[in-house]
Amino acid sequence: MKKFLIVGLGNIGVKYVNTRHNIGFKIADAFVKENEGSFETLKLGDVAKIKIKGKSIVVLKPNTYMNLSGKAVLYWMKKENIKIENVFIITDDINIDFGTIRIKAKGSSGGHNGLKDIQDKLATTAYPRFRFGVGADYGRGKQVDYVLGEWNADEESSFIERIPVAVEAVTSFITAGLDNTMNVFNGK
Image (cartoon, rainbow, N blue to C red; front, side):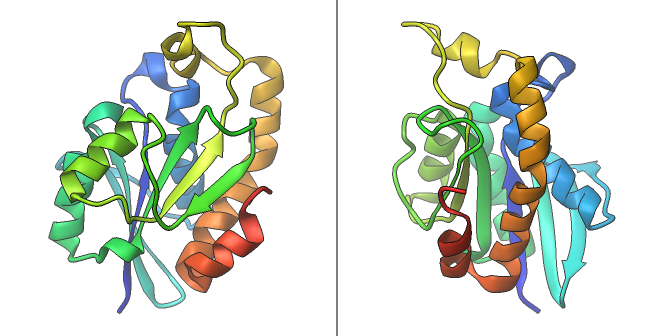
């Protein structure tokens, strides 16, 4: 049976729940809910195990905080014996317009500390990732405040509309493969 590890990046704690940096957690939550699963707190994160069309999926929300996500990703890859091409990292991206989806098979961290740590722990930049654009509507030196800031009202209502598309993209990665998913969802 083919196994997948879907990782939603974010920060744990009430003060981070509705921040731009927690988009990965939000999409992971919606994906698990859509597939009638539930999370339990296990080693290095909250984990849900579900099945889709004969495939076994482990969904992880690391509890290591964003900048140390690699440790949790590596642990669950090894524990569940999941190949790197079946790992899908979901994260925010300030370099992409709000709500835009960009899926890639490999690439740099783009300055994202969570991706940087995953890259370091996995010793490669060749792992599938799903970047959800949060835009860059902040002044000089205000990047941290922006990504750790809460959604404004317009962003929140747009984000709610984008969640089903994000869930479809995750499902597509599992059922249709990375190339098909990139063709259908990139720029959407």
